[in-house]
Length: 411
Image (cartoon, rainbow, N blue to C red):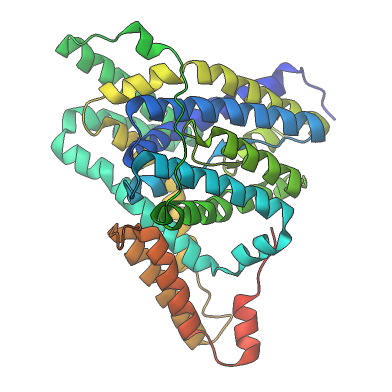
């Protein structure tokens, strides 16, 4: 086996953190602001998430000597952006974050909860996610029509880098967005107070409401499990690593609980970025790749120190700029969710079963994409109810077919 310098896995970890942060922080800030956070509270959530997931990564990587990487729930942040302010405002949203953390801990402690999540039809869960992501992915198109000179360079950079270096496409789009923001600040002669650039945490006492628990906590938990934690385990398996399920859920759940009052919506296993630390590119020696995860954790601690400056730039950004970055960052998750929601194999089952599953997925997608709230509860919750209801109504009557259709897959 080729022996490489320790700087290789350390460098891979730093890249993992930089790519993970720049590819999705705009979605996090957008989601937090949408559910009622002030600019200071949203910046606090970003800072706390960086610090807590950094500490969690270091603890898990050092303890188990495998490259376990954590992330904030990007699909969950997109869900917040589509949900909007619920009854009780920001404190109620924070209460929902707290409930989400408790549910994640419970998932690790009680296997029955994992099986219950697995019973949700995969096409329905993915269709809900796709419906949540669609409005955010349309934002760059809308912004381009209204502010072409600000948005076009961002989208052009993303397209070019997607062709030649996909990993850096979204970070590159963010760098161009920063340039656009700086030019706008210079032209408008705006000034930034020095205290706006310093990291600070803002505490919000959680408040529990039925609307926030049903409209935010439950969909956020389901999206985080279905789109982050379970795929994160699968990614690690492709590199022959077995994720310690209970400790991982314990760490991500406890850190979510600890950070909820500071604005952390949900922390989880990394999925897409997990490969940056777990692949042979991080280190040919699989027994040393945990160093990459640990260094990613340290890098997040450093990045957290600069998160306030990033959040301040977002507040001062010209209209549509950050939405454009968030939109292109979510295109890949949208494509994956749509593919999973529509990829129902008619060759392996009867036409009735396939039609029923597809109908349930499409209905879920339409309700989630509508963004319509009812009784103070966001569309994601109603989309799940509609999708599961139609799935149960149209499922095959034959016992063997029904068992085959609903058999859960464990995490």
